[in-house]
Length: 238
Image (cartoon, rainbow, N blue to C red; front, side, top):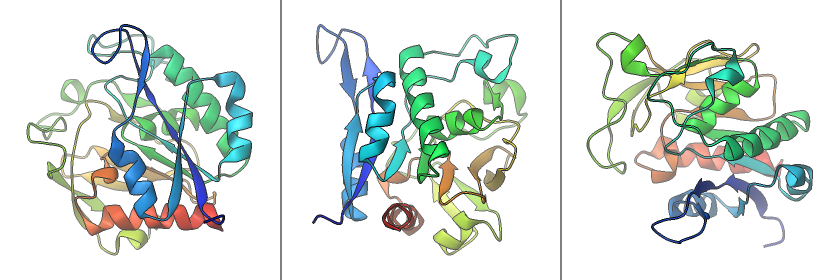
């Protein structure tokens, strides 16, 4: 078991109420079980920016998770903020520190949903703040059905690393977001998009493993999701 890749997973944070009368962290169990099933050792990461380097010294790969909040538009140069945007500044500060440190080390990174969006911003890209406000006749990217079911299909880009991992060019995905990549970060390429044109995945071919997807592969609703986790863990062990 000593050769297991240790995978840092960013936590969500919540204000007092519900689980506790005090601030608390949260993480769906399937974020961890997906790592275990792919052969990794999950390690959830509390939000301590000053400890980012210490965390990075102890992990082999980083998963930046999603959540019901948004990246601050000021981080990608936007002069205004859409009324739907919800911030978690402390979480974003920590995740940016982890992403920047992982990028500096060329450590494998998997960005999921909001994690993909922050990865794009960290690398110099921008975001659509609210899809219905910018994309005419858009799909239901905040699907009404449960997240362990498909919401729509995505088309993978031939020749991309993600397409090679998935073993095909179309997969069914779940969908739980109202923001998306707008301008792709320099050096990155699009590896997936929805049929309404919304960017569903990015990757940086210059790096060991740097992939972001807009859906939630931890639910493993397709074999492509499981393949993605296995490829990520394999890169972390290389």
